[in-house]
Length: 116
Image (tube, rainbow, N blue to C red; front, top):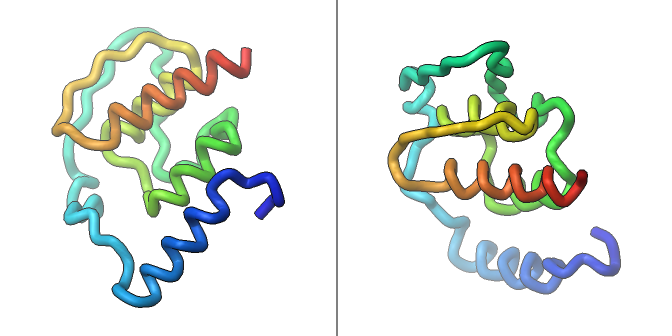
């Protein structure tokens, strides 16, 4: 980690806690969500992704690092479509169970705007 990593101390403390008590359990098994249908419409809708690494252009480093830091290993059904759409600067309207998908999508849109 870089010396100026603002999360270094927090990550070290979490590692100590995880060593004592085990890792966190989000309670959601996203593997069972793979078959949830998602509908898209419009012209030239960006192709869905199956991993965060497939984003093109890649996610901003800070956002990608935070996704990994949170323990997310693969995108939810909404994220699979919303991330490429957001990165492309396209409009998006999504409806899904409350959770990290909308938060991650909003973060991508904000990161993208700051990069411009």
